Image (cartoon, rainbow, N blue to C red; front, side, top):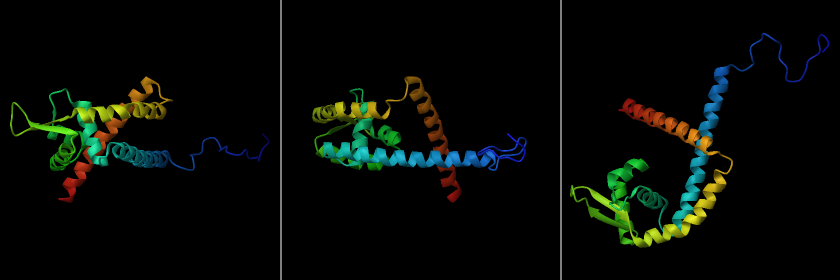
Length: 178
């Protein structure tokens, strides 16, 4: 390269970048946040489609999935479902009564504490969810096709860490507003 001549994209040695590192990190954080918003919106569309196929609402679908994935034939409490879904137990109670009326959910008092309501899927719900399971597996395989088990595990752990911190930040904001 001759003196005085510039190469596209090159910057003089010893000079700081035009954008500080912190600004780049902030942009990465903003990009990550918007990606999470987009993922959430797409997951909502997917939940709505599965719910529609089962004839329930999106939130009811999530309740059924939480029960399906956690039920050990003993049932799962309203509190456990509300904690998993990060919603008020009163909401889960109201929705579970509707699901029980639709024949998709059994509700019964806990044998150890009658104040606790245990929920489990009916045979009909299990069969309907099983019918969808092949399509759900194909969808999941498509979404995660390019991820190795290791990458998936690392990503899951990183997102779980971010989730915990976001939950803590939200709690701090609620406390400050009071």
